[in-house]
Length: 116
Image (cartoon, rainbow, N blue to C red; front, side):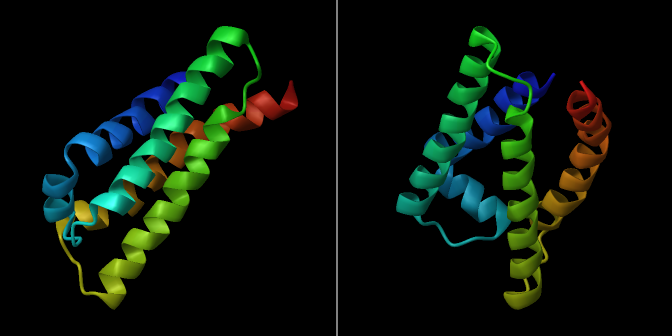
């Protein structure tokens, strides 16, 4: 399950960063910075490609941890911009909520994987 969640989540973030950058920034309430968005998109694309390799080559079960940590750190950034910059756009504040949901959904699977 881990690689598929990473492929879906990181893959869509990579696509958004690389191809929909300015519109995505405006929607979230961030200033557009294409150089940073491209770098962030490439990092998410790297996670996606790694997840595919992990699945195809059967390299392990823990690729989802990298993605979850990225999204937890990203949620912290969204909270910080909400507080520091007053960015109260719904889409900005939804990242922490959705990350809590995703962690809650995947945490039991990670615990089971560690027990194996």
